[in-house]
Figure 1 (spheres, rainbow, N blue to C red):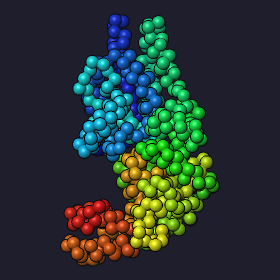
Figure 2 (cartoon, rainbow, N blue to C red; figure 1 turned 45 degrees about the vertical axis):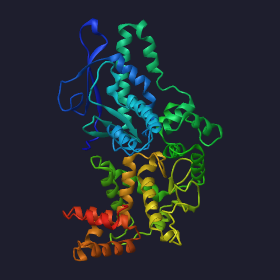
Figure 3 (cartoon, rainbow, N blue to C red; figure 1 turned 90 degrees about the vertical axis):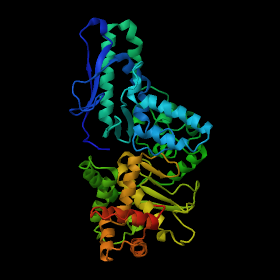
Figure 4 (tube, helix red, strand yellow; figure 1 turned 45 degrees about the horizontal axis):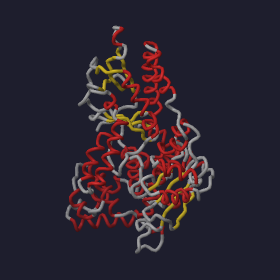
Length: 477
């Protein structure tokens, strides 16, 4: 999958001159100057469609396109076009009743997010997927995926909808008045419905959470689209959980009082400025780059072990360590207009506080989770981001990949891991390689999984391949 620059999405509608074919056009989609649909890379190759079909699609699915940011089932598809394949893998191990239920919601998701489904009677079209991810929109034609600014894509979709609506209304105002009005009203909706779309939770659950005061619904569509309410984002991250557990997680987030943190704010600005120049890099590369910048800013040598608890204090991030349900919750980071910045570690999680570890500061799992949450605060906090590390969470996958990469590189730089291997005499046998892993884990306070992962990354730049042995040393990595 190749990522391309964040250029503008453009829809081209070539209208026929014949007055008899006012609802027909030739449609093509491009990013920048490059055609991407229906025939990638070929100029002048559009698809003849009925423009009222496209307007009906945009009107009907405007809210999921603008507000929904998660897949409808618990899969980790890297891109929208992978969803059904990953769903099929999951269904191979599920009972028929689960498969039937999930098939319905996956099909509904495809109807909303694959624009190729908009044109009645036209089958076997190449896909064109749209799925929001924070302040980006994933655009996927089945061959490549682009991450474009959400605001720009929203504008492009609005423009093409306006163009079609105006043409139809001018052609026959009586016939198309209702369609034009429906398009103009696309942002309207009741507050509970907007909450359900923006969080990905069931409408009935949304009603309950509003009624008992757990969540405040969006004031209007723009409030929902802005996506800057930290508690609503927390609800989205935990949306796969039962309602009572969502309430518990929201109550934990509320424990963090709002306070200023100039150090975190300034470092966040610097990190995001650096990442603006790395739009063409994959999430793991962005995470590593941010980790190296933060290490340098904190005047830490690459060979220094990081005291992550001291770093959080230095940056003005409140850390709470407590036992909370659900035990699947490992950590939480929150920073918005009403809460934070703060991070929580849940000692009910055996990853955060294993039975053989007496103190939280000695827990490699707790240290990694805090570093992970630090990444969310630095890189995602500008939008009131709230990150929930919880079983079956709904964090956008690219954001999670970046945070994991940041945490690993921040605590143990790949180059340092590789240098240790060279200094140890380039061991390839399991026993001697295991000793290198153990020494690095002890010095940097990380798990063997993290060490083997960073060692593999570090040695890759030297064309050294030890993955099979490293898999044997840490098979759970």
